[in-house]
Length: 337
Image (cartoon, rainbow, N blue to C red; front, top):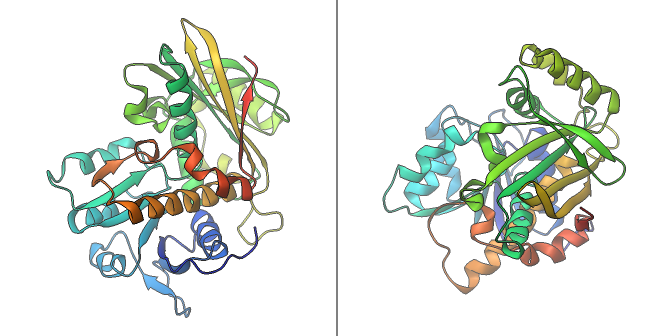
């Protein structure tokens, strides 16, 4: 994407020195935003702000400096989000924290002062918006099926490794399902993933069943995981097995093919499916966050945003984000079922 004219908006990116955070900060800059970079480690950059989520006193002072806060760091205390609930403002969380960490936000304050948006990346995030559209078109669906495609050689960081490891090793053996993914994946036997998180689509699914799966682009890696799964030993995998990604400074950063699958079913029959495609999971997540931030700023210019804790599907529709997403090379395609 080309650098755009300044929007006059200022964003604070928490975790801006991490794999996802650095790409997110760059994506906002390219979209014309003024960017403040928050991290624990000191920097000589004039836009650096010290933010250590383990030290809440370092968090609040910088939040008031920006129009929008983006949190790319999974933290059990959800400190920045709690501060926004208490004091006001708008924060987008693109770190996909476990729902057990975020539940306290819904009940911690009866009259929230600010707006927290969870699932502000690509998956979860844009996948929520795709699911919302499919369910609106097929309200009789009784099940939502999602596949998150990953790569063992992509840009990642410690949080990304922990995310994959945590959600694959919670069980010794996972359900599998053959899913007709588009090229370059093809029909693959996918592993059930993060079962307790219900695809991070929250109340959107209602009483419907949610099946969430993962598929690694590298066939040899995926087959090895399937073999471990058949033996019932996948929970014994060491986290080091997932530390294979390229650094943010590497060449071809975050450019692997992504084809996240979202499908609705009725009585076991697939009714409709769409895939969300881009080049690079982290790159796509960064641009998805920018698109969501811009759509929410546009909405906020017309009327105050509701306060509380929301998923992106509660506040915007996929059509609101499409112009930016198209420019960023992110597209949604219908798939044959």
